[in-house]
Image 1 (cartoon, one colour):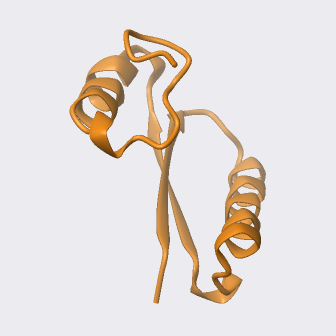
Image 2 (cartoon, helix red, strand yellow; image 1 turned 60 degrees about the vertical axis):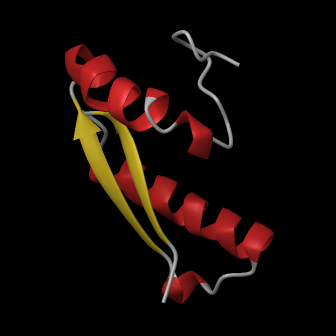
Length: 79
């Protein structure tokens, strides 16, 4: 059973927006990778804007840059 996707973004989005995003992620995985939508799970981790660089950018992006498939358009790793 897989995949599981964790999406981190600023807090404040509606549950409707989160569901639409999760449906879009699942549809993209089905289309591009062939996974069955029923086997895809998506979770959301909301982060306060003021905490983003310390809570997400440094530990998840900078320290794991060898795993990045798409670089962010901000910070020193912008690409």
